[in-house]
Length: 239
Image 1 (cartoon, one colour):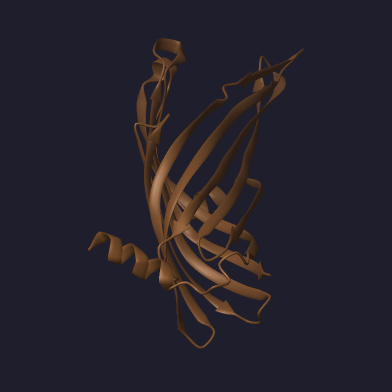
Image 2: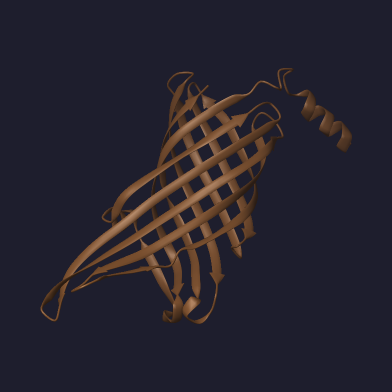
């Protein structure tokens, strides 16, 4: 019965299985976050910030993805970057002092999958995270800079469902779970798109990424048990 099922799935694909199609997109992830952060001997503290909270500190963000697929396989990559910053002025010993805080985050994804049918894909992906918090103190005589970059990676398994809703509307659902550097991590995304032309479409979605990562002890202790979630807007080119 299993052999018959596999043969049925394979036979459902058109003969032009080697023809590749491509998607290239840029997107904006309007996200907030909540969870627990721990740094050094300060211990764990609850953390929560809404989209409005973070928007006031946004310096720059950019994100995009590329996907290649035929009737059998999918290859995909995704890059997300955000930089937050804040500056505060004060006085120490009647001298002006400036404190500039900076935070950068990279999320890099590379993965692939096998197309079980025209609507369902089984996925295997790797994600690599780079967190770069820093502070610069412009003091009386010298500048003091502190940095504490953290980076790690995870491997994910998951699936994706995509279908045409009717007319030029389409729906995409994706979910995956993983581990590696993180004790546990998961990701989910739901998006609705409108195909203006064969080349161009716009999409609106909601995405969640949850990471539970902990390393070190004492002054080197670091914990990132956070969920980042929010609305995503994308512009996609298909060719």
